[in-house]
Image 1 (cartoon, rainbow, N blue to C red):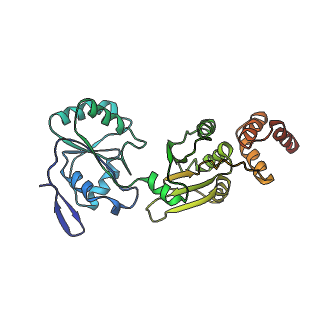
Image 2 (cartoon, rainbow, N blue to C red):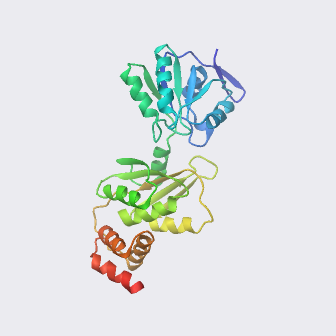
Image 3 (cartoon, rainbow, N blue to C red):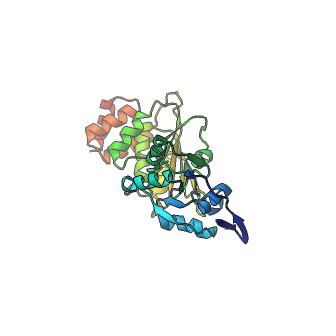
Length: 290
């Protein structure tokens, strides 16, 4: 009989029907795992995971002994046919990501699509989500939100993507690397202006931190640190619909950020567009700097 442990207490996991079980796992604190997920991880024929080293820590914490198979963006196309074949033979597979809900910024959705196409049973076990946790702690509107996934790695890609959502009446949520978050905050200001922003770092972990303010304010805070570490979610407030008269400091800061990665003419165009000013006025400010 499959089993799992919570502290000294042993629990037997009931057998599973054949199918794919999409299991949410903790985003940091292992205590956030659900009882259903523990029972499913113990009873499944195989556990499909992004990184066996990460998943093994969860299994060890709760005394689960089961077989793990890697399933990630680099091998998904090769191993998916064997998974579908196993499911058709009556096997049960638990699908997990390294943290949070599978299919959110990982390749699991193609496996779910394949199961649906083959009329294979698929069910989901809800649990921890970095997206929803960051949204709840941001202090920003929660009634409508849009998840952007990981922001593009390059400056132009980030500005173009964010600009395309400028008029969308929705709170925006994105994942970002700690190595790029400072640059991303610069681009958020260039693309979206002086909106309230929250940066959620190391959610549910010992060093959890939520920084709130404008993109420029948080940019200044993080820039003053020797390094930035941890998994990061950025939450951006929706547009207010009200015109905002930019201060001199805001205009000059936006010009500095734009000039860091653009020629003067391009920088002037970007700042003018996103601060509702004339390009020639911004360009004149740039010329004065020279």
